[in-house]
Image: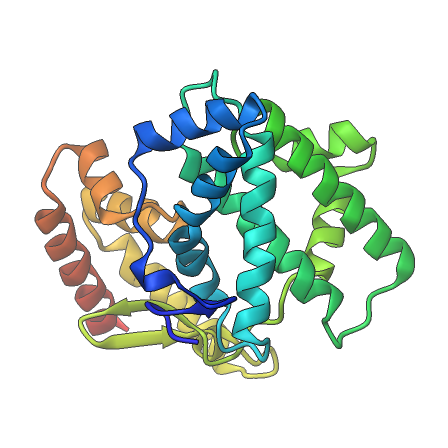
Length: 256
C-alpha cells in the first residue's frame, strides 16, 4: 500500500476523483432518500479522505490495508449519520468518525491489557461522544460526556486515557529551524538535584522578558495556539510572531 496509490478490491484509488463540497451535499441528500447509487458515488468520492486520515496511524504495527478498510467503515457511518440541515462541511464531521473507528480497531487489538470495568466505561464514553457529535456536529467536551453517562469527569478522562495508544519516546512534539524536541527530552529524573536549579534559572530568565514576549510564549506553549492564531490575537503578522518567538527562546537559552 502506498499513500497516494492504493488497490482495494481491484480499484486504484489514485484515479478516483475528489468531490466538491456542493456535490457531496447533493449526494448526501439523495442518500437520505434511499438512493444507493448516490451512496456508492459518495463513498468512492471520499476514499482519499480515508487515506489522508489513516496516514497518521501507519507505522504502528497494523496492516495498512486493514486500517483502510476500517477507515471506510467510519466513512460509511459518517455518511449515514450526517445532518445536511446544519452548516457544517462533510469532512469536518467525517474525519473524527473515521479516526474514532480506526482507534477503536487499534484499541481492541492492543496488547496492553486494561481492566474490564475501565474498558467498559471507555466504550460507554466513546459511544456518548459519537452521540454528541451526531447531535451537535462538533467534538464534545469531557463535561458533556460525563453528564450524559452520569460519571465524574476524572473517571471519563482516566478511562479514555487507558485506551489511548502508547506514545514513543522518540515521538517529535516540537520542531523549529531543524531543532526537534522529542518526548524523551521532556522526561525528567525526579532524583536529579539539578532539576530544581534549572527550574529556578528558567523562572528568572522568563521574569526578565518583556510583557509581549511573555504573552507570546504563554499563548504558544501553554495554550497551544498556532503562530497565526497568536498573530491575529495581538494584531501583528505571523512572520513577526515567528521572529519574536525565536528571539525570546534564544534570550532564555542565553540566560540559562
